Length: 319
Image 1 (tube, helix red, strand yellow):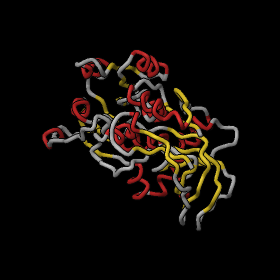
Image 2 (cartoon, rainbow, N blue to C red):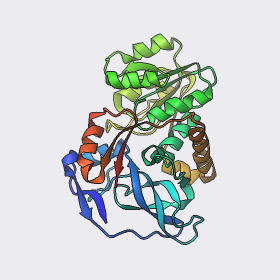
Image 3 (cartoon, helix red, strand yellow):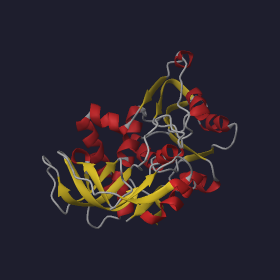
Image 4 (cartoon, rainbow, N blue to C red):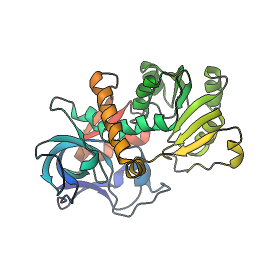
């Protein structure tokens, strides 16, 4: 089968299609013929070699896969032909192995690109808000709010009944997109962007969701009000956050979240998150946006768009 690999770190040009063996599912896994793959922003960091979590070469691209099951490993409760979504560590390929314990069932009439959010991005957005303890009547700040996870978090945040939802972005189009989702928009390219947030939330914010890291994390933490919570779930700048103890003396809490760690620690609750996001999606409360779709062979162009940070919602690859 064809699968994307990179044999050196660098820009999108290092991505190539290799011929590799079709993987075999082990116990508790299924093999799917891939229809669509949702891109994860962190893969641009892995590919560039600037990630604080280095990965061996040749590199593979992670992603949220939608496809139909073609082979079952032992101890699985699905059937061949079922249409499902799942997270894969080797997603950009014609076939992918998925963990059956965390699959979402996808209706036959659902758009494959939009449905990719069901495997990880949607449940992650919901769990971030839960971890951030968003209070009714409170204020939540969502960094990178126009991105694949961020735009879902903006929509799901409404179910927590906050007073104010604030989203950051770095281009006029993305700021307009955030406003179209019903949130206040703040321009992250403004060196004094925290002042924009304070104008909307003079007493500080109750919850911050941050996948940026570096200076942006530090500035966001300073905006958290007493008894508020900062949630970190990535570092697309390549700079892992560091938290001095003095920053916590104002009764701030800081926690981190990895979907793989959450699934390992609380598998039943992780499955409940998938069911809850499915309910919001089918009710129309959650509407994933697909910015653009690329063929698998055009993965370099997809990653150019990923690096440019222009997407309004998800970037999708199809086989």
